[in-house]
Image (tube, rainbow, N blue to C red; front, side):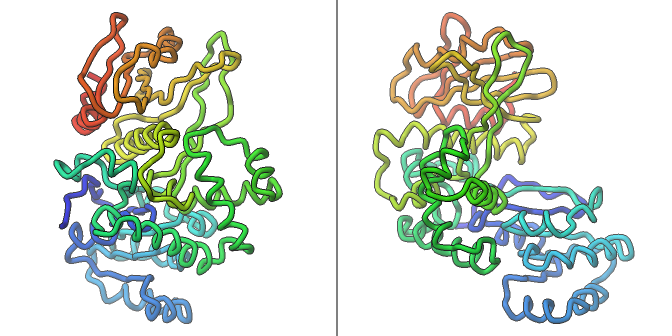
Length: 383
């Protein structure tokens, strides 16, 4: 079943980056049915252009002026960006440069296209795209990657995805020298889902050098499976923590990297739900520009006080706390009350799995996940 994605194509050339399995190629076929397509995932095309990059320019010369050209898996041959630059200028061709890894692009001259190509992201599904089929428990267990969500055997598909990632993204692109070592590091990185990233601790637990652990984390970020959430720094009377928090882009990925796809254990639910809320905000930040930046807030010296997400739009802030319990509890609001005096704070929200929409006496909104997703989709969050 083809679902409508909420990613909108700009009118000029752009990079479209997202993890494998997020449906980039499917969306491109629907959004650009008449585009000229060069698919570098095809081994025949890849080998031909690798052996003779000049064939790329020869093919582009045959494309009518002003037409869209889709280059899929562009990170496999990043040097083609030189020709992309030239044909944007000479023939006014418009390019969609699609890929699942920012690593090789960052090292090979994406800056050549500065100002000539915008950047867009493709994320796992959001509830708006799934509609009535969305099921929170299923999302926490298997995630929302389209390739998994659309499968009738979700657990098997997730496991196959993890192996495909290691084989095609890591091994084929030679991103690490020690593939078994990287594979052993993945479950540890998954255990840190929703936690602050202390690289020294991770390296010690993994039994690798700190520089190796740093490199592994960078690979997970640059292949778009993970992201870091920085701490918010403001001139408060307390000093904020500096370590970022670590999230996987999908609950199913965080779980399969720990080699489990069974129903989430109670001790998993907090991090999984928090991560799902983080990814939802991140998706709408990219798709609908609902905020300029997002952070977490936690003053040092005050154990147990934290706000999961601080959304920034101009001079205004919204504080969001994600709690996985089934019934609202007033003690969930400790962090939101501690952050109440932050300059520019317009709203404080607790998001929990399911239940009524409520408001505390001091103005904190509590709402179920689905309602929060609806407010993000309609941009009612700031009203």
